[in-house]
Image 1: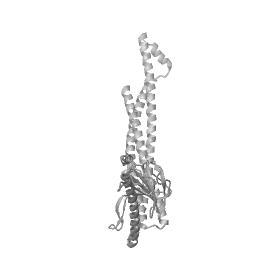
Image 2 (image 1 turned 45 degrees about the horizontal axis):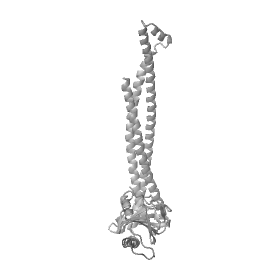
Image 3 (image 1 turned 180 degrees about the vertical axis):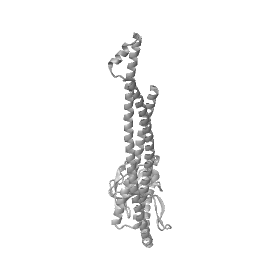
Image 4 (image 1 turned 90 degrees about the vertical axis):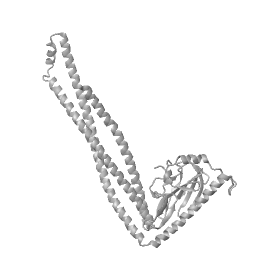
Length: 400
């Protein structure tokens, strides 16, 4: 009986021990995701306020609000997942506590029986008389052994009761903490839902505003298209010169001979697809590829060869991989741009206010290339990756 009881207790305690770290790890991961989403929303909030104060165009503001709405929805989804997991964990913990309580009752019952049986008469004389009344020495030793074992069994039972009681108290505290956390997340979710409704109302108001002045926004889009085309031509020119000179070994305008393409570096870059660090941490508000106007859905917006990442003014922008600074250019609508070569791959960092490198510098992964600036009410990094003369979707190259 005692052996089975001991095995039960070890199994139960082991189960409680192994479940807690996994739960904590999941919770930490979820809290990290929530913190990241809250940071993204804070950045977008700041940009929306800046955008409004600088009377930037409504389309830009709508893009920021849409990004904020998406981040808010993800935050609510994360809260829903956490609430669900807390509910599951609470149910498991309640079962564990119920089992511990039942075991505690059983142990207490048997302990009480031992106490009643052993201490009907607590006088030591009774114990001595019990031994001395033996018929022979052998019986005396047996009676002594019985009393000694009874005392030991009582001590063991008392120890087990204390152990289960301690575990029960810890688990009850953990359950109470879980319930408080779950209630806190539910309250936060309600707050997030209220904010989401307000943001969606702002979005609808901006859509109505955009509908009233189609010609103006067509002009804005045409201007943006010209800026995008100018940037693409400049990037294409720089890549063409870099790849042609690298293959032919021609001399440029300076007397220095151009270096050949570093294909070893290119292979290392390619091997890190999907693992590259982000140049800066912030929400992507404009993704790679062809997009259409959110209101005039048949109206094409300029094709985006990269991604736009919303950031706080002055945020440091870092190189995503080892390479050589090819050129630094200034472009209308994009301010300062740093172009880095990684063999026959290239990364571009635009909309910078300050630059920390110069053409020809060898740079390392994570090295600061500059800081982001506010242009036309937008504080965003425009980032591109090219394979030779073909633009790539940066989000497939960067870490998830």
